[in-house]
Image 1: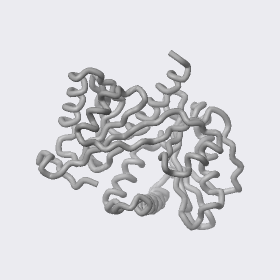
Image 2: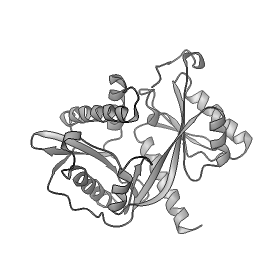
Image 3: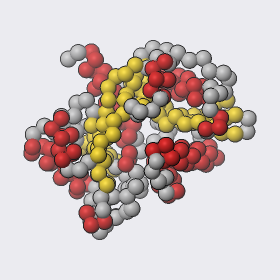
Image 4: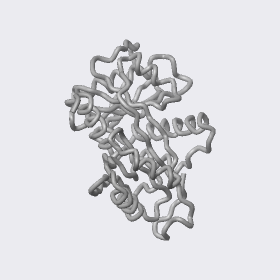
Length: 278
């Protein structure tokens, strides 16, 4: 095995481990499933991952396990990494799943950044989470406008925030403050194998271009070695400009991962636990 293959394996473990934080995990012979019955509409909290199925029988077993575990849920999702067999992804496409690609970048040295002084604090209590709920809702609204789709319902945004909070304290949220205003946030997790991760970068639109996002990145990346990680991952959508910003800071492209999603109509669900799909 090449050194890079070992790094890829660790990175994939970290990506899957981050999504599993705070949720139930169910292992099968050829896949792992993440489930959160309290947040059934949240894709990140309810999906299949680390799929290693190769044969027709193994693939059918994984798909059948998903149907059993997520009966009544309004969606099915599988996350695929560089070790997922192409045959499995092909089956998902055949079954009507829609794929989305994420570029994963990794930082192996120091972050190249010199932000101006910005007040940053660790989110701790209910007051901080009230502020994070407001900021996350702004993020959801802006994303919906950029992607030209309806914004999530308020209830879905609240559910998403609670899923994030359920990952703490292993996951840490950092809040940037400008004057009396909370202006942005970013989260960090050190992982369990020396590869950490930073996620969820957002700054208030009218306060951008002031170095707030860079200051958040510096603090979140500093958290990795403080808690035992010497490498840090960050994800970016291929069509979004942040990928170039991350590269300029010292992150290098490592791999791409893909999420495949299928939403279900009411007639495709069982009667128990049926919800409105997003």
